Image 1 (cartoon, helix red, strand yellow):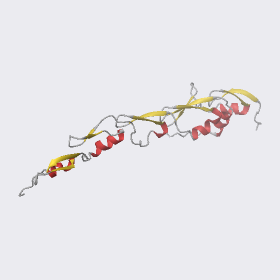
Image 2 (image 1 turned 90 degrees about the vertical axis):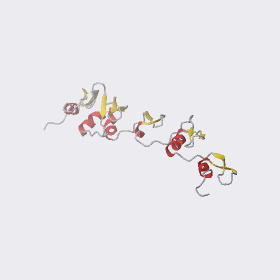
Image 3 (image 1 turned 135 degrees about the horizontal axis):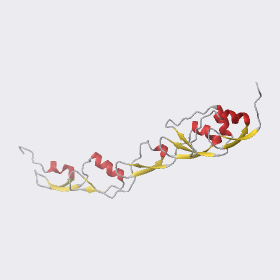
Image 4 (image 1 turned 90 degrees about the horizontal axis):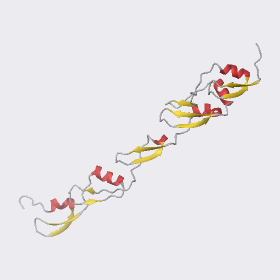
Length: 191
């Protein structure tokens, strides 16, 4: 067999499309490779976030001093990567740290790094400007945060307000919690 030519020649990488300098034998072998970088110097990172490159593709990319844009299919965000590091970048991509706004059920939104977008959100800490009216309809409170308002609204707690009422049996006036007022003034049958 003929020995491989090691003469340093310029060639266009069939993997990334950039002009490189490398051994003639590598330039010839690289012609058979498929291009993974499109005409806009962009690589699509599939939703499973894994790309495996052949050893020949890796050899060709290691010679390239240029960089490309890697676009994540799963979120649409992109980042720059050097071609010489592309094999390791594609096999173990960095977490997407682009900030995204996540809408909450309360109407507010939280800004998080993209890689955390599917995590459960902590309670909303936005200041609250609305009142919660207790089931009695007479008393209300103004929670400090949106999370406190949501908790009150979902749990429908008893009214903690204090009212004065007249006891039905002896007609004395007493202070009781609002939720107990109807029991204090109720006349029981046979009494």
